[in-house]
Image 1 (cartoon, protein in one colour):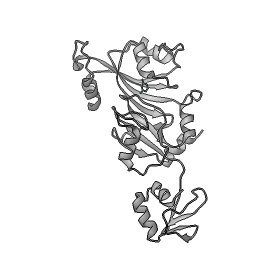
Image 2: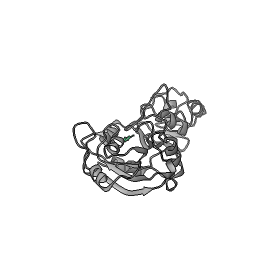
Image 3: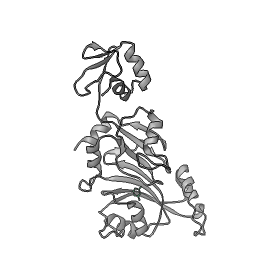
Image 4: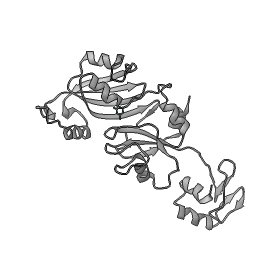
Amino acid sequence: MRLDKYLAEMSYGTRNEVKKIIRSGSVTINGVQVLKPETRVDESSDIVYIGDERVSYSRYVYYMLNKPAGCVSAVKDNVHKTVIDLLKENIGNNTRNGIFPAGRLDIDTEGLVLLTNDGALAHMLLSPHRHVDKAYYVVADGIITENSIKQLTDGIDIGDGTLTLPAQAENIKLCRLWELDEDVQDIIKSKNNADISQTPADRIYTSMELVLHEGRYHQVKRMVQAAGSQVLYLKRIRIGPLWLDKELLPGECRELSEEETSRLLRP
Ligand code: URA
């Protein structure tokens, strides 16, 4: 690849900034000074220095995004903001080519999306044979009874011919609107259903963490519907060993730490 692209991808500056650095004479490849931004560099074998600093090239990049509602889990979209648009807003336009979301969330679902250019990892996380678990925080309308929770966790018919795999439901709480986080309250109020006579504040909600071991289309919403309720708020909080960083606001993203990356890559 071109040296200026290589350095820009390694976050040493924009393409124009790294061109200036190269022309200033501070970059060497295998001990030889290079002045031309278009010089080719072999990222797997060449040793590149800027001044005294060795540039180490990592082929794959991993980011976690807290996806907000209204944004789509796609690389390109003509109407909506995409998760890749948000990545660029967070870290600038010098992102690697080929980054994509490893798995999809619905447009109105919030939470953890892994963005990477590592196709093998994405395949491993999404493969129906691997059963990598995904955990969701769910707020559903009304009271989900113990019986319905048992159906959700034992396996439930969501209309595609086979019962869902056993799942776990944790931290199940019945609550009023004011007991939920303020941003969740706002979303629920905005969904106020004209068919329902009670105002959102008068109603009772069920919140829980649902851990699934498969990823069918609209799975959480369909499971909750089959259990007689309706999802009003949905957020993914974990993929396998990777938890959504609670410090990330909706729309924010950050690179995974080395520790997070190695936990994720461990077979
Ligand atoms: N299940 C859903 O229904 N929607 C999502 O976005 C993710 C899981």
